[in-house]
Image 1: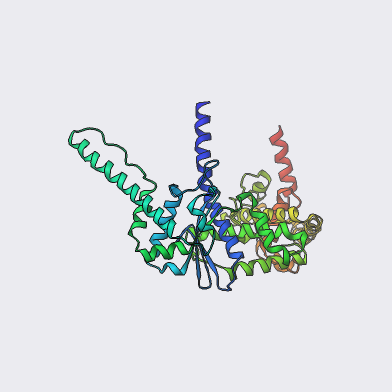
Image 2: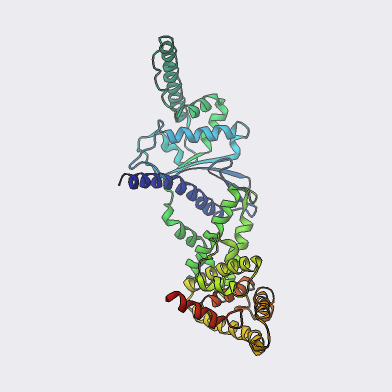
Amino acid sequence: MENRNKLGTNTHSAIGPALGYYYQAIFALISLMDSQNDNAYVSIETFDDVFHEDGKIKNLHQLKHKTISNAKMSIKHDDLWKTLKVWCDFISINDPMEGIFTLSTVATIDRSSPLNVLKTNSEDRSELDLLLLKEANRVIDVREKVRKENLQLLKKRQKEKNMPYQSRYKGCEAYLALSSSSRRGLLINTRLNTAIFEISAAHNEVITRIKKNTQPKNHISLAESIIAWWDREAVKSLTRERKECIYLSELQEFIARKNAELYNDGFTDDIDDLELPKPDISHSVHTRQLEIIDASLTQRRRSFNTEVKARIQRGIWIKNNLYSASKLNKYDANLIEEWSYKFDEIREFANDISQEDKKARGRDLLDWSHTEANNQVRNISPHYNNPDLIRGSYQMLSKDKSIGWHCDYYIMIEEEGEEDEE
């Protein structure tokens, strides 16, 4: 029981940061969808949690999505000073009048709090500036007092006191280091948002922004496709597999393409936008189909990789559109028919060729499914032409023995299955 509790604690402790990063990505997506400038872009974890350049406006967003229950924001709140530290660093090398600095939080604010002026665009901030200076000086003074006390304790070889305000003091120092004009510019352009959406509402937030240009029946499917694509692009930007800036034009291009696919017949091309799992090499029939023809390592790798791509793509279609299931069944019948033309030629001469020749012809047939079939079998839709659907679908069909590569595959696999049962 003790180990189980430890595991639960570790798992729970990882959920918060993971949700925080995911929320940043979703917030960046929503911000980009709300852009007013064609050249707008966002970046995550660069100048701020989310940096959004919308024309001449630079939006720096600090997000405090998770906080303690019933928390209230005040000028003594650590999150406020952590945020000020980030923004002070930014304006140390940038003009504060070029940015809009927004702290979005689920915390509440008392009606009497001086921070309420930050909920407006034009209300005077001079009193708030004085209160922030007072708080910053208080924090620094308390720390200086403890530092001096610790020096005396060290001389006496006694244990030092813990330094207070560890989460706050750097923001206090940074704020005090600003000139009065920089502080004024920062506060004029600072916004406080206490009405941010919950992460559970991500799909609804996307749907709200696409529903005017999307058929109602496609709202959920398109929103899920957008979020899946966005998740991948956000991760690639964080790992620098792509440029850290994600542009509105990229998002618009993806939405237009995916919307057109859904509008036409629902056969969307999703695989390139997803993080795929490792191929399943444990399926006994699939593996045996390749073993009995002595398939090369390259052929096996290609077979397993395309199978997982086709399986996931087909699953997405069936989930989003019941019509797809019946059309896929008909499409499989076409695949089997095309395969049978090749297979029957091998069977016709099966009695006159050696076992090695049977294996070789089986490998040729497998290669045909990988390299030539996509040019000979019509696509499932005029709007879908990813060749991995055909390649992988043939692998799926081989798993349930609807097709095979060795001319005696059905008998050989059936006999082995009977032996295993014994």
